[in-house]
Image 1 (spheres, rainbow, N blue to C red):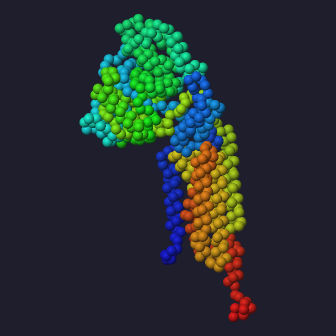
Image 2: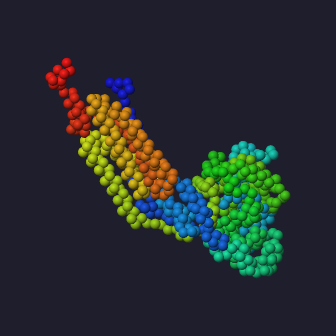
Image 3: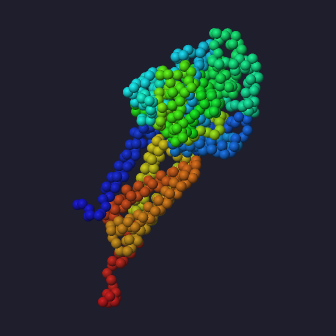
Length: 636
């Protein structure tokens, strides 16, 4: 027989709870990232204090070796923290140490911290000239020639092609306009034609610049080291030196071969470009930030083989409003989508117009693309990511394309989104930390959680008897739900369980116990007022529900505020407390109340000794007993 209208159907709510458990654990066992044996798929991600991790120290390097401003160091710490946190809710710690160091601690033995300290100085520069950067044995490439291994422009646009790169065996690299964002006087929408083989992030780890010399003093020292004759010969070059035409010139420029990458970085751009012994190998090993001056022409390499003389930077990373790694649906290649600011969009449009029209014929013939247009190099720190030929005026948002993977595209987007570091950092040490006390800490934390749950259960059975089984089952279901969420969140967003997180879960036991007490005491009050247990259950739930929701809402709000204003392990405590409280509410609504409704229909629920409602039911029986004659006489 169907239940009366308005009466709840506990089976439906229990079925919804069962569905939630089924979906959760299907995701745990079969969702993306689930690898290994069945037991391996049930392992949560543990924090630095439980399983160890990776720690890296970065030291700020300044031109004259002076102590960096405290405000700049703190700004750099915040940017690095944002970069690390952008990879997920991993409980990473980024703190300043002393007056020039930043220490990064990340849980897990396989954490890659090599790129979080890169300056991420983004510049867009016109390519003015190109030369072979392999060494003095080779001569300058003739116009239109493609040096070996270089990412020179190739291919021509298809008039009917979309604004995105056309699919090919090797994905094109460059900057593309979003659909509808280009104009070129009847030309097709801008399409990059440079094939980039460069890695999106610098691979070399340069040594620190001398700390006791300013830039001017170092340049004077380099000039003295190579000698006045070599310096004068290099300064007089108007084009890359051709040793086949002037063999004596090779001897004059030979001293430049002995320069280190940090000495090369202070040379004028024309010397870096025109002297063959200054190779791409040395240029790529310059310290990060060596070519960040936007007002100067600079030299950078592409593909490790081709030197490019680049114009002043007319668009910078600060002109980018937002960046994100996306999968290009046309080419199935990962790209970095750029949204410019208002002023940045105007600068970008002017730069592409200047490159498209080759204003003042600044671009050398050998540096032009196949269509005779200037190329614009996308320069990150010291390396050219791509250098597409501009085949139209870009008036909309654009994309950086290249040999990106999903991880490298998202990493570059993260660096651009959170901003460039105000200081240049050099890695000092990176070490893996073994959790010497991790196993003991984990055992102690789990023991504390187990003892806390056991005490709650013992008290529940002692005081509430049959109702204690409801408490026990609710806590078990909450624990299973929380555990599944821990595994899934650790795999999907990087949440790591630390001792602070375990403490948050233990505190949530108190919140769960409070909701039991509120509900059951309200139930006793309803029975004392003369209602039967079956009718008292829905009335007690209706009155206790608001209090339970209010109490849990306060805990959730406190957890959210604590999470927003804290960092590190305290943030993990807040996240764990909030997660456990939310899941406890799910169990309250989908299990506790429905199971109480079902218990109310059983004979055992009416027994004072079994149900745990002893005094309430006994007082009700006394009220229902036959009245005495004296009382009847009084009533009469």
